[in-house]
Amino acid sequence: MAKYIVQGGQKLNGTVKVSGSKNAALPILCATLLTNQKSTIKNVPDIADIRHMMGLLEFIGCDVTFEKNVVTVDPKGLKNKPVVMEGVCNMRASVLLLGPLLARFNKAKISFPGGCILGKRPVDAHLYALESLGGEVHDDKDLISLTSKGLKGADITMKEISVTATENAIMTAVLSYGKSRIRLAAAEPHVQDLCRMLNQMGAKIKGIGTHDLEIDGVNTLKAANHTVTGDYLEAGTFAIAAALTNGHVKITGVNPHDLDIVWNKFEEAGINLDFTKASVEVLPHDRLKRVRKIRTAVFPSFPTDLQAPFTVLLTMTPGESMVHETLFDGRLNYLAELEKMGAKFDTLNPHQAIIHGPFKLKAAPISSWDIRAGAAMVLAALAAKGETEISNIGFIDRGYENLEGKLKKLGAKIERV
Ligand code: EPU
Image (cartoon, rainbow, N blue to C red):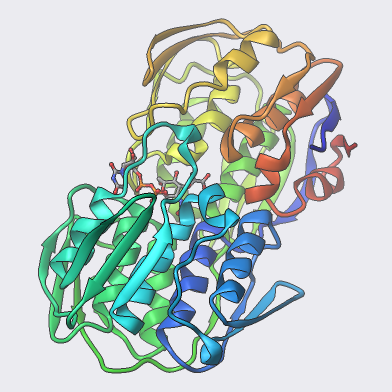
């Protein structure tokens, strides 16, 4: 697998435009199966997870093209066959094919999705929602298998606020007979973007952006013609990169208010920001201040996907900072890599750690654990003195489009080898 070699200590300066959101584009590509017309999706990031998903769509008979961040999906040749191929096990998001296939064919069968590196991630919340809408789950070894005698709208209270389970429930309910209500729905910007696209296709979804969705089922949907929303998680990653190099960076192509809770923490750290409707500018700071705590939770709280990147900044702020990861069991594993760079912390349990700052990170060979921990390693390398080698960067390629190209344009010294 490729590596990054980073020479730390360069201040980042300039403007960077974020790519389309991975976590919006993945369900959106699956939602193109809900029509039999050819859809066009713009601003799709060219990243490994999207390539995987396109492979899965082709495997089940869709004609898919991808050029200059525009994907077309023609599902005329869509076949109702089990989605059993390597990519399914590698990528958790393949579970998003369940809802659309069940809605189109009253039958869906896929390999149990992978992605276990973040700890135990069951699919019970998905199955509960699909069963509530009339799906029947069958015991089929390593496969998830569902059939239905006809999907019917239902009043569903989700088992937990889960992003992809909510997306599966929505994609099924839009083609189910009658009214559905989805309580405890996830409201992340990517869930909102999926809903907006479905409404453009003719779906009737109300309550977008809240935890309580009302859906009037329709018989058919028309082609999607949609531009994927900018990636707020990528924007957050660049903002942290700017802050920890004490640079001056404007990040465009994103609604900055999707990250209000994160900006609160920037303010607590003594970092000033300027906003427009579609950008945020990180200004150089005089002195970093203590951040008492970050606690991840569902939107609009602090996003789990920015926990590892923000913790790198916490190594530079003075005093003790508590990091509380509430969603995933394995999402503090990357601290072992930061320790190699000299970070001082106490791990209290799999969900909580106390970072003792400030200290100057030192270059060391480190490795990437998952998409976001991988980005965090790049941030740590940018802040560190000397040359850092980061292995396993395939994880980063799953979620960030041309990360090194964008960082180089801002003045970072980073090479892929
Ligand atoms: N969970 C269950 N049962 C389920 C589903 C989830 O117990 O059926 C648990 C999980 O174990 C976890 C929690 O619920 O503890 C939250 O998981 P959620 O279902 O919300 O996560 P997800 O939908 O599988 C999406 C993103 C993740 C992101 C999380 C949280 C996509 C494709 N993936 O995953 O993104 O971390 O929501 O916001 O949207 C990433 O981009 O790097 C990434 C991992």
